[in-house]
Image (cartoon, rainbow, N blue to C red):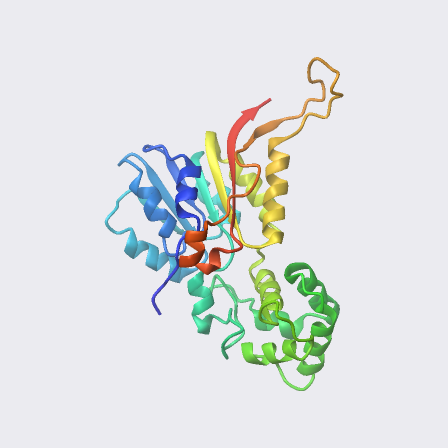
Length: 310
């Protein structure tokens, strides 16, 4: 299947990165290289693009699309390890980082990857297919309490307990191995609603658990800020409230806040700021972009600029 991925908030990301021609930029979720191509086009021969992805398929596509350029490096890895990745490349600081979080259109549409509730395929959901842990492990091995917890927390699903109970009841008879088996169980576990597909929230929750998308995110944001040069920019696109909350909290903490009484003439609390939040409100897709790419509906872009102050 062709790797199709329409880059979300493309112009806004490029503007947000404030690209310097001779700078070093990281696309931590390179995917189909939609954002990366626009980044590298703005770089001189002295500039460098580093593309990271967990998905080998994505890296192969990125290699093909970037083959006419020379100033890039591709890394099979996880943006959560950005400090170690840059260390291995002998790079201390970079001028900009872009993280487009969540699952790609290709991964959703490639039914054999097991992300979609609209097909009948093996339960997989791995972004990194070299990883052994899959959705099948979650569904068949987690306790009822563990399942209910992740479905509620990561899927924000009101009927998490009912879904978890019915999953555990079903697997007593046979192992749950396909997306359709899981979808059928979910559909029987909650009342009909016009609020999207009944399995949407549960599939999101299991995908997040399989790929450990939320737990490291706060630290990933702070580590990304650490490796920025002064006045470097971090642009992060989120697609659901859990991601957005983690990013927002990390940005707020990195920006810091003086806790001194307002009537003091100068600060004595000793707070430290690592920079500034560029846009107080997240940037969202325009009506024109939504017509072309409905999957951009929930996308939010938050930008942070490194400006370290003691």
